[in-house]
Image 1 (cartoon, helix red, strand yellow):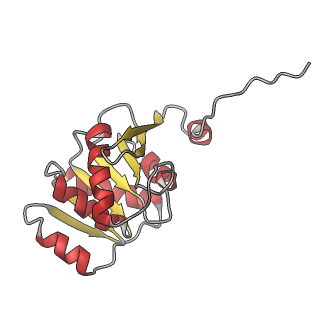
Image 2 (cartoon, helix red, strand yellow):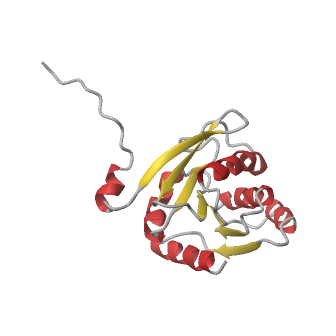
Image 3 (cartoon, one colour):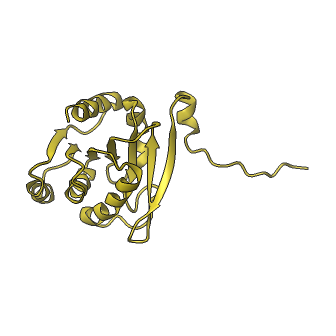
Length: 181
């Protein structure tokens, strides 16, 4: 007789094999719009940092950055990406859902970082969640949306970094920004 038991998925098996002490898991929250927003939570304590991947990427694309940070962080799949439901929509629409996810996954977070156009979403989230006093734009192209949102955040520290290349160097830059706040 063949054993047909179904094994539970462990999407983080590769990461935990490399870093067995690392605590990592995925959570979902159902937001007011009725969709599920997914986040990957790294570390054993409350996250002080929220990361948003670039469009076309998902939360798992930042595994190496999260590992290099070595501190609690949450990486959120914006609506329509990764394991989040819904459709991508506009940055402002995505921000409404992500604000609720931040409140659920990282209520103590003070820094949000967005990569590429994820930086526009990060600005829009900071506009709706004043506790996020620092926004990091990594490889975010300047444009009308960025300018308009920046003008609405006069008390927010906004730091621009180059697009992440080396995960360790990007993590070090994020740590420097976070500890400076």
